[in-house]
Amino acid sequence: MDGNNEKFSSINDLYRRILPALEAKVSELKRENIRFVTSKDIWNYCIETKWKNKSDLRIYEIVSDILNTDGIKLESYVRQNIINYRNLIDRDEN
Image 1 (cartoon, one colour):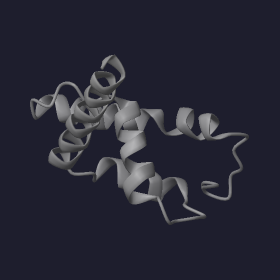
Image 2 (cartoon, rainbow, N blue to C red):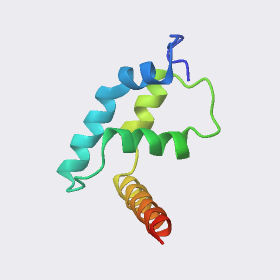
Image 3 (cartoon, rainbow, N blue to C red):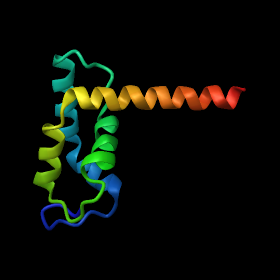
């Protein structure tokens, strides 16, 4: 993921660059009463699902993917991660 022929020094640098798109998506989700999804959740969802087998993505493609991600799928992804995390904690406590 190198952007519009732009080079980023790190994945964190890229994340900071597209943070406004992530925050816009969080705002959209809140208007749809999906209030617990964060910008990091959206970022991780896109990395794990949309960009998993892609390379050389451009900034406009990354932003488009973020803004066009289905809110119900994001909500489901986050809920499943919460369940998985709780199950992991439960196993560790036993």
